[in-house]
Image (cartoon, rainbow, N blue to C red):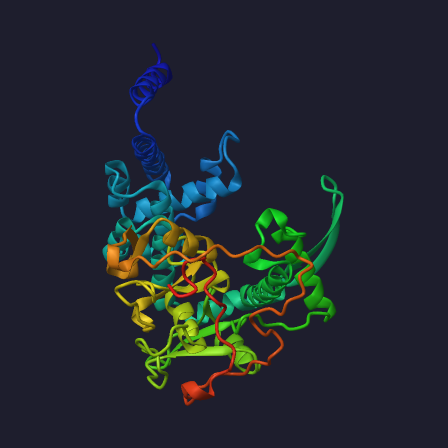
Length: 438
């Protein structure tokens, strides 16, 4: 029997042993096998790499035979390059300490840091202990802290030189396509404004009062309509629910550190200066303690200042990683639970609408762990908010006023603003049925 047939027989026997096992055990087994196989392949590819070899030859070897996509070949090549720098990564994968996705997170960070991430044991430990989405946020923060201003500017300049717009017809769908290519910061700001306008259209179509299947437009259709409104200048308002389109995170204690555009990463000083010149930009400056972020039981709803601080801290949904613009402020302990949650920045987190609702429906509590990772656990009896009565659905033709005014102008928030002078709009109401007050 040849080697390939032996392997196939062994794998078939292992699969048969798990045929009637619980789903969780099957998934754990598959993840372990996948990591072992990926580690074996990456080690062999690493052994073929010459010292300081460029990623391109390894990518070609990984793609040999045409059995995988270019994206998969790139991931495999980066995994091999990281293992070349630190062979212990392969041992961590082989032992099951790192899944393939966690190894890819480290390898991707290594490709953006000249291999440094692959050799940082603190980063590896943090990613290994966190979930995949939380691990990506940890790696992103690690890269942000070590961002080189010159490299960031050079990458921005390269993207800027290649900016372009093109149109073509998709032959399969029969639709016309408008394609924009440019700098990461510009594309992110355009996308963010479209997302904000789409949120307004969602509210107009019925919002949470209507089941998604009853809405007259899909999310994809609303996004197109939102982009059309913004590009043609027909939008009633560019902001929604008091959320800014862009949040800059600036470390005032370290002038040499690059500014961070939340949702994108480090941006050059030239881009930060352009953003600061616009009036509808909000800025979160670290180490400036002139905002009231701890309200205790004095305020039930989070303030706009708190929302901006959470966007800078959490970067997105703490459970699934959804973009911060699609998130709501969640009380870790519900406001109207027996334990009486408080509106303090340390007692709040950003969650997307789906995770927010599911957390309450499943009676879970979100907790922050080491390295800034987030987990869930069963809520204690005093952490469970009373159920709210179900709202009566309204149709998309209902013309009742929306709860959030969307035509108020926004302005730049500076370090000397006091809470009573902040913009009058508040972040969007929590949307889960339980946590208008959670």
